[in-house]
Amino acid sequence: MDKIKVLSGLVLGAVVVGCSNPAKEFKAELEVLDSLQGVVETYQKGIDTIDAEEIETLAEEVDRQYDFVNQNFKDTTARDFWVKDISYYKGIMKTFTHFANSHEKVKQELEENDKQLSTLKNSIEDGKLERTEVEKYLRDEVNAVQQTQMHYNKIVPNLADQRKLYKEFKPKMDSVEVLIRATKE
Image 1 (cartoon, rainbow, N blue to C red):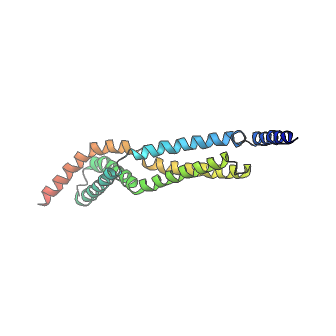
Image 2 (tube, rainbow, N blue to C red):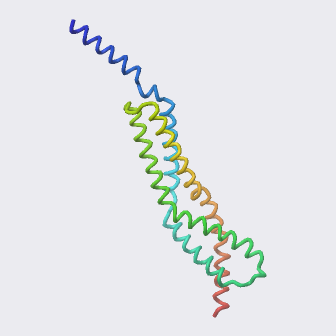
C-alpha cells in the first residue's frame, strides 16, 4: 500500500513537472532571450576591439587642429578647402569626440543588458515567473537592447570609415597648420 502511494506520488509529481516545464512553456521566449544575448555579445566584442585611448587621443588632436585652422586660416578664397576639407575634418572630429565621450556608457549598457537577460532567462527556467510577468520583462529587455543598439550604432560602425578619412585628411591639415604658423612668424 505504501509503495502504491509513493509510486502514485512520483507519477503525479512527474505529470505536474512535465506539464509545467518552463523550457517547453516558454520556448519562444527563451529563444528570443538567446538571440538578444547573441546581439549583446556581438556588440561587446565590437566595442572591445577598439582602442578607446587611441580614439580619445585622436579626438583631442583633431579638435585642437580643427579649432586652430578655423581660427587662424582666414583665406576665404580657398573655397574647396572650406567646403570639402574642413567639412570632412569636422565630421571626423565629431565622430572621434562622440566615441570618446560615449564608449564607456555603451559598455556599461551592454554589461547591464547581459546581466538582465541572464537573470530573466534563469528566472524563466527556474519557473519563478508567470506568463504575464515573462511577457512584460521580455518586452522591457527587448526595448533595453534596442536602446543600446541605437547608442552603439551612433558611435561604432562609422568609426572605421572616419579613421580612413582621418589618414587622408590629417596630412593636409598638418600642411595648412605649418603654413599658418610660418606666416605668423
